[in-house]
Amino acid sequence: MTTRRSFSARLTWALALLLLAYGVFVAMLGRQVAAEHERESLQRLSYGLAQHIVGHWPEIAAPTREQADVAAREALLNMLMVVNPAVQVYVLDADGRVQAYVGDPALVREHQVDLVPVRRFLAGAPLPLRGTDPMGSGEPRIFSAAMFPVRAGDTRPPGYLYVVLDGRAREQVESQVTHDRIWQGAAWAAGLGLLATLALGGFALRRLTLPLHRLARRLRDYSLTTRPADATETGTASTQPVSGDEVQAIGAAFESMTQRLELQTTREREQAAAHRETMASVAHDLRTPLTALHGHLEALAGSTGDDPTSRQRVLQTALAQSNKVRRLSQQLFELAALQSSDQVLQRERFRLDELVTDAVQKFDAPGSPPSVTLGGEPPGRLELNGDLQLIERAVTNLIDNALRHAPSARPVRVSLDRDGTNARIVVEDAGPGLPLELAQRLEQGRSLRDPPARRAGGGIGGLGLAIAQRVAQLHGGTLHLLPAPQGGTRLCLALPLAG
Image (tube, rainbow, N blue to C red; front, side):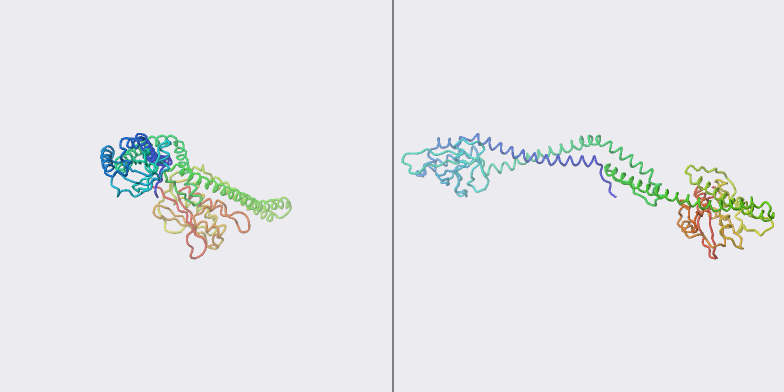
């Protein structure tokens, strides 16, 4: 992905290009104004040239004296070519038609000259004035003009002497010299102006956009510090802005912040709904044993004369319901404590093989077949660095869940082995298996605690598994399902061993 330039850099380049375009425009306009001024100055300096020629070379206006005219015209041409090769002298009749050209007549291509500019010139109109170019260039030319004096015996009105001041020779020289110099000067001026703009403008714009840089950096740093948690919890990963454009970075950070706020709002709404459902489920789970406990206590209170055996049976039933309330309350308290982000593990180094053996032995009842067995090959000494009480609670929850939810003639089987740098505690029962929702969450690695699973008949379930999963996560381990070819449930608590 290409890196985009910063806003200040792009603004500097834009201003530099505008300055360059403005410099080209000014150069062209200056060239035009300079050329116009030069023509006006030339026309003013040569204003009386035609009148001077008419006054000093009267033979030029006498077309009937052929030899005298030729000599006069050749002398005049030689003089003018020496003084100014760009000057072109024409003799016009009263209607503006070219009667003679001081030079090669074959060069004359436009034989009719517009007399309106000529008359305005003779009337003293403001300069510069442009007239027809008899050479046929199509470009109007500055000129000097004079009317021939009226002579005795003339039957026609006098004509005009028409002098073009900026002929083709002057245009060619001007294009070779002036044009190159003007554009070279304009190029140098534009280049220096561009460099000055890039230097001074870049420094000034950098100072002006410094608050944008700081704001973009703060937003980017904030995004980097908050994105990992968002990506973990929502399953989305937004890309870090790689552009150098601070305005675009601010826009991207704002968009990312908006998305996070929307996700957080949605998550909080879902958590609030889940919390309400959880409270309703907890109330349902507590109401059933509490109602039964209250009923048995009433029966116990009213059975003072009854058989002691019956009273003992009612008392045992009440104790069982009370134990349900105690166990549910304890699990809810433990799960709430484990959900806290301030949970601090009381780490210590201990032998995991001894802990698993002790946990299995707690479920052995004297004089009855074992309900829990420890199978598999002895793994030897397995040491773990973690919270001994939490891990013991997780193992106990897994065994207790297997006993309560999978009653069978076959005992619950617990095994411990080493898998590389991890220890695996496998709890296997022969029951009907986990509910579909809990099984899907474990297979997908999703949390069992947020929100808690719902039982088909009401209430919440899977609190013991949620506690075991949270304990495994706090220790860097996992709780997952293993295939059970013979039916039942096989849960594996994997924990990293001490180094």
